[in-house]
Amino acid sequence: MFVAVSLMAKAQDADDWNHFKNLARMNLKARIEYVSPLMRMEALVTSTKEDQNVIPLILDDNTVSFPLAKGKHTFVIDLPTATELNRFAFINENAAASGEFEVAVSNYRLPPNDGRWRTIESSRSFTGKRFINVSLAGLETKYIQLTVQAKTRGRIAALAVYGNLTVIDFSERYGKMVSATQSSNYMRVSNKPEERYNFNFANAYSLAKVIYASSGRIALAPRMIDDDAQTNFHFASSDPNPTVVVELSQNQRIYRVSACYKTEPGRMEVYLFNKLPDDLTKLSSYAAIASSEDHLGEGKTAVNFAPQNARYIVLRWTPDRLAHESFEISDIGAFGLVPPSAFDRPTENSIAQYSGLPIAPFIPIDPPTVVPTSP
Image 1: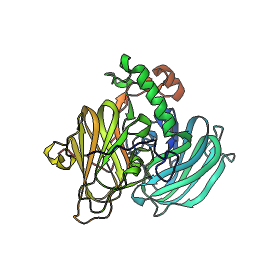
Image 2: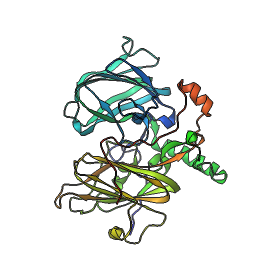
Image 3: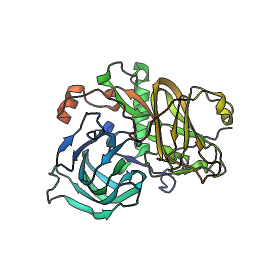
Image 4: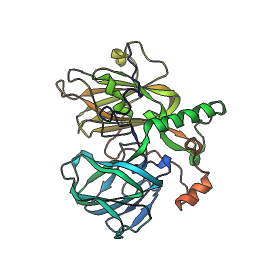
């Protein structure tokens, strides 16, 4: 028996799930620039080399990350317009990096070391901390600058800027767009690589719903799809195989599924269905589309596969140990490639003018510390 979870239930209770939308997303026309420890500026980098590509930090996938070497790193997030904000966040993966960080804001484009940046947080330590949050309540700004002074190497991920626009605001806009364009096949996946952009269909803003969890407080299940990698859903410690089902708004063509979760060793299996099985406790009788082993307890996984049509995404976790603490999932992603028009973006020529750089084909990026494996 499945228990549907309403995303509208207690939508304004921030203790239940984060109803604010992350605005630091490329498909919302946000941009990011990076100043390396060698003081090189890189804007909208298209290289796939791990040490050069800063774009993953503004994609929808919180399992991809950016490496921090020792030294000073500066990231500047450029929002499309000045926006009222409430919170800035990022993840220090596995709490591996140590050092200090600073957050500053501006309504004008300033050089990184310009004294006119308004400092919001200064010389704050992130040593030993995985989740970092900074209040921006009451601020209206266009540019957010994160400066990291890394004393040890690590990785940064899940960069987020939350404003006063809610997930429900975006889901209503998405719903109207889908309704208006279904007959014209607006969401069709293009065969031309230069016309494809990634989009997370397993999220509240894209009208996805969590319709089943094998244990835990079901009313809190939207935490897994609320566009916030720092809100967690807890399964029962007695649950031998924590399992979750996400229903997409409609049948979509998916090529990648990702998840952020508690840093615990185990195996994540991914299943895709157009019609759900009657008994989800017997998933072993079905073939997983892919699986990933996380014996180091990295706290994230992602699997790529040949594009498949699916309405339901099923994730099943098997811990390495029989006795384990309560398992937690904080973020689920199911990605498809859609044309730029699906985001109401400009044409390719105007995108090139906007970014100042030539347009390159979208290339799915694997998490650098997780190696997906097939069953």
